Amino acid sequence: MTTSSVADRLAELRGPVPSRHHDARTLAALTANPGCTRRAVLDAAGVDKRALAERIGFGPRFGQSPFAISRGNAFERLVKSDGGAALLALLRDELGLRPAQDDQGPDQPVDGAGPADPGLIDLSRGDREERYRRTRDLVVAAARDPQAAPLLADHPLLRLEVGGRAAYVEPDLVALRARGRDGSQRWRWYLAEIKSFAVIDGHADPMKVAEAATQAAVYVLAFQRLLAGLGLPDDLVATDVVLICPKDFGNAPCATLIDVRRQLAAVRRQLERLPRIGALLDGLEPDLSFDLSADAAGRPSRSAAQLGEAVAAVRARYAPECISRCDMAFYCRDEARVTGSTDLLGRAVRDALGGLGTMRDVLALSERAACASPGGYDSADSGCDGGDVGDVGDGDLAEAARLLNAARRARREALAQAGVSAAGNGGTGKHGASA
Image (cartoon, one colour):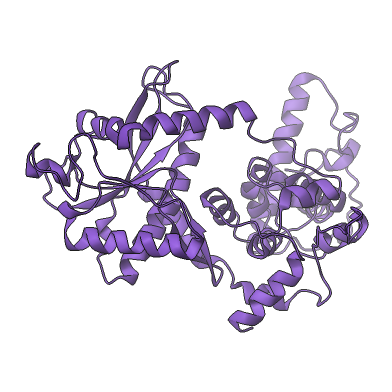
């Protein structure tokens, strides 16, 4: 497909409703599950996945509370107050970063910015192309003369190619031009991520920190791509990201540097693995549509049943962690349960099963493996008639059969110690605990 035909097809899939744009959160979730065609298509088309899930009866049961959103916005305003003076104090005092203007002395304002005005520039206004152009111009100016550029860029807009299409991402608060505390004389851009979860006695929720690090890695990669497009070294972007959170039980901000090199490598690798969206669209039915629009009387253009059929027509790859990452997760989980998919067991178990797609296949292999191995079944629950039960195969299937036999033996031994018969346990019958 050409670029224009891809855009037209995605618009047809979405229908006459506003497009939902990618952000760092959706990109982080997409790269965590690159094999899911359903999410890739819905995100590329800009479909409101939450609204779609609600229409087909599987609305997500999670979401950020209004209180948490208000608290986050209030904390961001606090950090940005007085032109970012509080943030600069944190960076100097707690992290040892040296902004460019520090080298000029306290009495030498830069481009109208003095000690009381550290040079916070607002990039949040305008359409996406205008904001991206202003961000790019700011980076070019800073590359030419770090001391003449504003210290802080408020809500810069960056761009990444995702599946062959441009996606825009917006760092939470700022991009900062400074020297690190490692003694290096080289200027770098430091990206700052503001989060409203608290750091108590120097510790924060590790899951929330990990999520913030992955989102920040998306921003770092987008900034690196921007620099590369300008002919600048991409290592001008620091891979240490400034994480700013409330300290203890108050609202006073604290800052720390987090190393996102591991997350950056993972995001880069997964984005490269994402299939081109044009190739995915070629495999869809021509009349497929996720149109959520309604007429003047409020009647939806497509019924819940029609939308459900459209969703089912696009292949998904469910994983238990999708529950916390994707609005479509409850639909996909129910679909996996109905079909008996091994996706329900998680990626690690699914991959260990040698590519078997359903629990029926797993149980069949388990039976063949047990009958083919000495002592596979107890005489009381054998089910083996001594005939040909089929070859368990070789390679991945042989390894899966070995693991299933080991799981069966472990279960039988545990039940024996508990004084419970494997045959009369009322679990999964003669197949026992399959894996």
